[in-house]
Image (cartoon, rainbow, N blue to C red; front, side, top):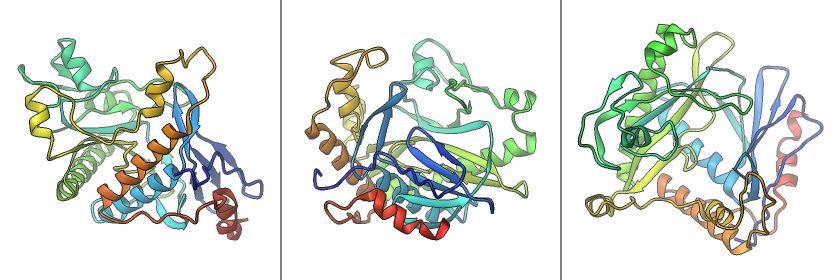
Length: 316
């Protein structure tokens, strides 16, 4: 993978209204379109810790596959793809609720149902889970575990549907529509993942309103960064043994850093190229496994920022 140059950033001065996200560069055009460029930045510990070659292309193209295979369920923001790392979409007013759908008792964060369940909680997100569930066990049916959408570095907070509507984050009609979209998208995701020998254990969706007030699916969908995928063949044996399900392990770099420093307070050590290349290979493998399509590698040594600049010249 060292033949491929990473895209650290994609700053194009000729494009208007620049906004830099953790991973994406964003530009808002005067006509209501937004240009989203996925860089190869790997964000962790509240900062970018490395650039993983091909990561941005993998995420953009994986989301493209899913946007195209779910457009019959829910309209999305996509208008065109002028470059492998770029999507041009409708500019949306992002709704302040992140729709997380879970099919299994899994997770590691403070808002995950497994974390809460192991703390002894059974009532969460406006529902009650039964006693006796085991780590990574399939739930009786997929459930919605929405969180507040954290803007400007805030933390996501778990919410119930009653809290969402009662606090005015969404209207009842908006909640009903988001809930229906999310469960239908997840069902399609699980179905197609199963065809590829995968289990889609959980995922998150982001929605926004267009200029006419219609709800559209935004951001990304069913990518290896927004979703938890497990390998179906090894899942039963690992579950019975109480082990962790086999997945696309992309955390080589994060784990290596944590073993060597406190990444929140100390300078990061030099990350070995071997680890970066290993992570890049996992992303490409994830794309090919999830979509069933061969990854379209760029020419070795190509400067991705120069290519993107050429492909976006028509928007200057």
